[in-house]
Structure formats: C-alpha cells, structure tokens
Image 1 (cartoon, one colour):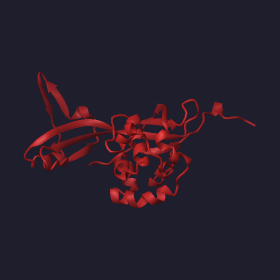
Image 2 (cartoon, helix red, strand yellow):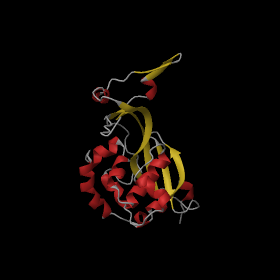
Image 3 (tube, one colour):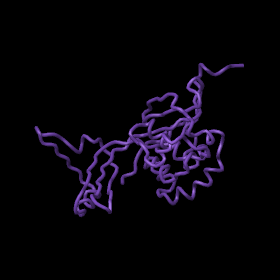
Image 4 (tube, helix red, strand yellow):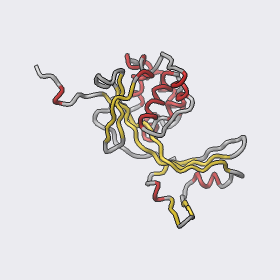
Length: 216
C-alpha cells in the first residue's frame, strides 16, 4: 500500500505514537457502541474518530491501528507489532480523558488544508477536550470468494476519477497496481471495491480563539 502525505499541524498533541496515550480506556461502552470496536466505520471523519475511541475503550489495538492513516502508521513503526510495543508506553500517558473516551461527543468539526478535524468533549455546551484530525485515503481492494478470503489492496495517491470512466452504458476502470497483480491469481473474486475512507492523522489540543482568552 502506498503511504503518503500531510504535514503535521502546529497544534498536534504529539507527533508520534505517543499521541495516543491520552486515550487509553477502562470503562465499557453500551452494546450499541461496542460494535464499532469490532466492525469499525471509516466512512467519515466522525465515524472513524468514534470507532477509534470505542476501540481504545474496548482494548482492541488491532482496530486502533487500522484507524490510523498510512502516514501515522509509518511514524509508529509501520507494523501492528511496532504499535503493540509502543502501546504500554502510551497507556502510561493516560489522563482523565482516557477514562471517559467512549463518552466523548462530537462537538464541532473544521476543515483544514490537510483534512477534517473533529473536536470531542463531554458536553457540547463546553469547550472541546480533544481534536482528532482525519485525512481521506483512496483505496482499491479485492476480496476472494470462498473460505480463504484473501483481500489484496492498495492505497492510491491520485483522485479516484483518474482511474475510472463511463462510455455510454459501459463502466471501465484502469489501475496498474500490485494488488491487481495479486488479485489476478485468485480463482474467483467476490468483491472489487474502489473507494475513499477516512483515517486518523493525529491528535490535537484545544486552543480557545484569541477573543475568548481572558486578559488580566
């Protein structure tokens, strides 16, 4: 998969895996939310952020890792094993937010030149506590039919529109990628997916606007 892009914003809480430490969880979310820890939703910045928070509360590091962007995965070490090694150190950074991670609500969101920042807090009427910056990643994925279920795929560093088109009633797609080479050796495919998902690029601290800061 292709790893890319996006510089870190100035307000990033941490610029490495240590940034996850303020989110370690210990309380259990209700069943309706628990499902996100096992079947995460990466369809929007809000859904990805919440999936990450629930996974942390449920101690599901595989899902936490899946929620990270390719750029942040590279900073962690590029593998799930590296993330698992870093995770105990992250847990030592636990603050009060971690105990309430799954209770956080999406308070507001803002667009940046890198993606979307979703701000989370315990009370929508108060200032947010934590910002989760998400970036979009285009991808190609194949899924094998039958028991083995191979799922070769790649992230694409160009707009999706560059890879497909329409000619009357004919839809065509042309992608030169190693995932397609692997998929060509699979006897039968169940699904071919070309899409966009949102992954986490970093965590941010809240900085009140200048006009809201009290002066002595």
